[in-house]
Image (cartoon, rainbow, N blue to C red; front, top):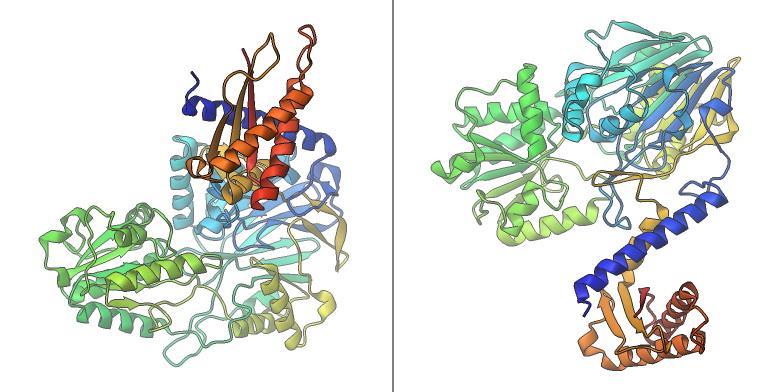
Amino acid sequence: MTTNNEKISLAIKLLGKRIKEKREADRGRGSKSHKGRNQTVNVGNIRSKGLRIIPLGGQEEVGRNMTVFEYGRDIVVLDMGIQFPEEDMPGVDYIIPDVSYLKGNEKNIRGVILSHGHLDHIGAAPILLKQLGYPPIIGRDFTIALVKKKMEDHEKGSSGKLKVINIKSLDEKIRLGIFQASFFKVEHSIMDAVGVALNTPEGTVVHPGDWTIGRDDEGKRTISYGNLSSFPRPIVLMLESLGATDRSEPVPERKMYENLEKIIGSSKGKVIIGTFSSQVERIGNLFEISKKLGKKVALDGYSMKTNIEIARKLGYVKPAKDILVDIKDINKYPENKVVIICTGAQGEGNAVLSRIVAGNHRHIKIGKKDTVVFSSSVIPGNERTIQRLKDNLYRKCDNVVHTNIMDVHVSGHCNAFDIQEVIRQVKPDYYLPVYANHYFLKEAEKLAIETGFPKENIFVLDNGNILELQDKKAKILREKAKTDYVFIDGLGVGDVGQIVLRDRQMLAEDGMFMITVLIDSKTKKIFGNIQITSRGFIYVKENFDLVNATKEVVKRVVSKNTPKDAKTKINWTMIIDQIREEVGKFLFKKTQRRPMVLPVIMEI
């Protein structure tokens, strides 16, 4: 007898075959992007007559940041980031940019500049650098160190293939073919962030990457970008725009640290601070505060421990002697003498904070007297997950602190007034809002217009748009670069496409309904009982009437489509398709749901 597990295994194999057939059929019809674009090109098919700017990601989402700059046969790339999956992408780990536009011209890539070490800017580097033949990468020390670590985590020994150009000084100028790259200081929530200016015969592109402008104790801006207005013109200013709708006054860092010190000093139990592992400078200051208050600090979370170890080796953080303790040793100290700095403030399923709340952490048990601090912002798209985490924490702990209650976080992103101020300072000829969802970009456009900037010189690009700057005039070309989602699932790169994702969505929404039929090769009749297996659709043992009625539908389909004489061969494909169609219609009529119907027919 065939067991249920064997049936399911066979069904999965059939599903794989079906997916492969669909994928091949789609290829035959021609490739289309995830948003229906159909006139795509690669760099080999469109010769650059001037400077071209092509975003391959980051213009319609938060993440997947990657921009191509092309002049003649010289290419420079800025950033190679990932995008985290959306709720309708079951099983997808993350998404990377599609680099089809660059295929065939890898030798023309003069360098990949990495603005800073956040995953939405470097996370795709291990995969894309390999796909593009390991072009030179350019960045500051902490950024390069993080990339090397990501490379080794992805494929051991791969960091040795990197060709690295370290930016040792912001006064450096690096020649990248016809491009000359200059660099400037930016303030952001990670160390060694850097802005870039790319000078070409057609003008200069100024791009700060992610940025903010800090405030001193009197509320005055701590940095000016007025010097950027002196670059050769025309100047194209590309500004990250996540803060385009934020008109609140920024919190001075001093106030944030005062609040954190007050919380750590007054807690009657453990203090658990959830923050981004990239917040190295903040974590270093928390070391100093804890030392001052006589507390021990334990770090938890793989990326947290990794980033701080890298920063220690570079000399960026220097924790006082004996302040750091291993997480497994925290119970050796009084609870009110322990500060835990960990990952998971975005509600990630297997991150530290989620495991603490679920009671699955081996060393940390949360108590009513403990204090939990969210020293981080909410990444767009994570709102529901973070709210659920907060709700569960409030059930277990009386002291949960987040930015709605107290200033315990300073954003690494600009606000609306800073966008306007930088436009005034740089005085660009063209303005491109970037690195955000489309509505942020449109709001950033409005901000520029409020300053008096001419609307006709503002370009809100979609992923794949090609902006050409020639003879001091800019225009968007009719052609587009291919910018499909490339899904990463485990070790698979791009093997989960739209068809597979659609099948997963169907399984997640309505489940699977598998029908196993044995047919006697001599009589051409059904042998034994039809077996029904359901996963995520109905509970078979409690739905006998529906199951038995479905079996009758299957019997009618088989009887109608099997030849009566022994010599005629059975058309298995037709019977399978007919069962799928008729059972699908029947189940929808009875339940108003459409499970994935998987007929399995075996001749005996």
